[in-house]
Length: 146
Image 1 (tube, rainbow, N blue to C red):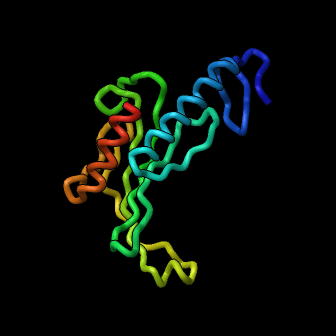
Image 2 (cartoon, helix red, strand yellow; image 1 turned 120 degrees about the vertical axis):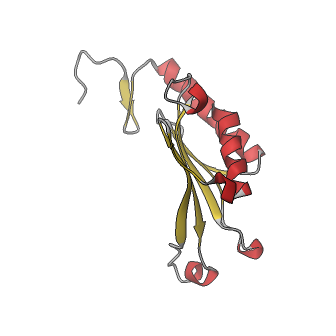
Image 3 (cartoon, helix red, strand yellow; image 1 turned 30 degrees about the horizontal axis):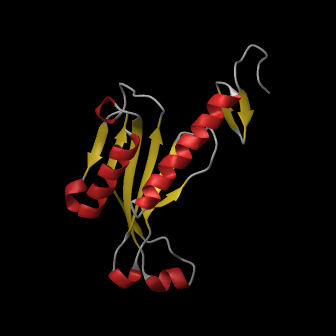
């Protein structure tokens, strides 16, 4: 339960510190960004709520022997000194997952995952040079959200 002096409100399990109009504007902003990624050919996992997270990915493509590439992104509606290049993306983690088709068919699709990039208020891991697709995903995220 919220303290009576707190500003904002809770919706869908997320505490929003602002007005209903600001939350509605944020939801529309997230939706526009999700659509922009789909228009670039990516899949997106997001929810229209006050949360700052979105997932942008290329699903695995067995016919092309291509692994799944997934970016977990935390972003804000304004630039941050802790963001990538002082922008709105404050956390970005890109993972590559290889799984076997037979594992997927039998419901054991864990596969092998390796981190290619991680930024958490500062760079921690950068192996983007090992994967042109991951590098393109990184640039798409930064262009759309930063």
